[in-house]
Amino acid sequence: MRRYSSADKPEPLENTAGEHPIPMYWVRPAQILSGAGGMHRFVWDLHYAPPDSLEHEFPISAIVHDTPRYPLGAFALPGGYMVKLTVDGKMYTQPLTLKMDLRIKTPLPDLRKQFEMELNCVMGINESFETLVQVGSVRAQLKERAAKAGQGALADAIANLDKKAAEIEGASQAAFFGLPPSGKQPENLSTLNQHFGGILAVADSADTAPTTQAAAVYNELVDSLRSLLSRWQQLRDFELTSVNAELKKARLASIDPNKAPEAAPSADGDGDDEP
Image (cartoon, rainbow, N blue to C red):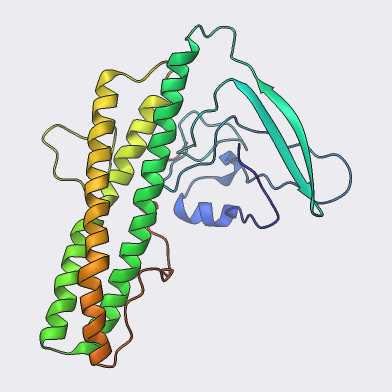
């Protein structure tokens, strides 16, 4: 369950309008639990927190003032939950029971398989996004250092590192739909972020266990993600360290892979998702 606090900063509708030029009366506004006295209503949509996806959309099944932004997080399983509310340093709890729609006859083990795949897809989306943030930050810093390095061995080392980082980063696919096509090109972090989102949508499309085909594609994506994360770790631990040593000799600032970028990576903004 998503837990909100005063530190949460939901995205303003004007930001959403800038990324998705659609009438804002369709969009579900962010829920912020009021700190004022008295009773307040908060509706849980039965999904865990949404992933950090490169792209977002609003479904064609639009509801005025209540259309959620996709992708959503994993769909919660039936069972017992605990609602926690913290006010002025004091925590209040209340049990909550989530019951299955009686019209759905899917066995709980199959629902659990669906939930696990959704949760793991969200993890894949978040891991690829987190690494994309680092790669983008490093490449931006490399560009700045390249402008000061002039020509020579240092400039060549910067260019070589940037080329390898660019291959790992990749680019999102325009007009991406569904699962990876057969004979697809090698994955990069951007396409992986999209493909995990595609599997998440497939897993969430019906109250049933994932198909063997979806499971096979998911396993391929996991293998690709592990490989790319390993390549990035090698790049950080060795080649970036070497470039930083040369930057120090040239009295230039080193590259900090943990430095926050000016803007988060995104593939939004094409305006093709109007409800």
